[in-house]
Image (tube, rainbow, N blue to C red; front, top):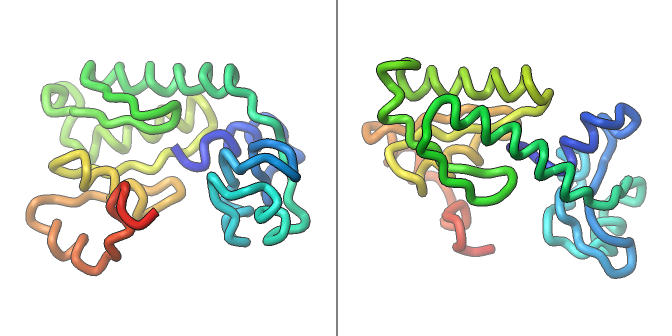
Length: 177
């Protein structure tokens, strides 16, 4: 999902749309749980101390996390995933790996399934999702981050090297962050 907590807040409160927004704790002691794409343009990122986020973007808006609400929205999204495959590995409220191998005969190829899932998420929740389609979870995760927000990136065995070679090592989850 794209800037999940912030996107849910912007969806639910039209006054927050198009504005730099963070979800997180207080200005003096808190950390950023999620930053909208408008806030990210100022260099505001998740896990950043709130004080630094306000330094980078003085006009930043902040909302307190509503975890039970995010869990309910996440549950809707995971229900959509399970309509396409029973093989859903949730990593967090806003991220999952899906193995659609056994669903190909029902729903079409991997890219078609990804497009259908993205459309269903948008239609049902008014949120966007970025999807990486790849032969394994690591490459799928990297691919999902390449075309945010609302992206779809397909990495095949044939184009894997040309897709991954130019990328810095820090795109590998757990490396350099």
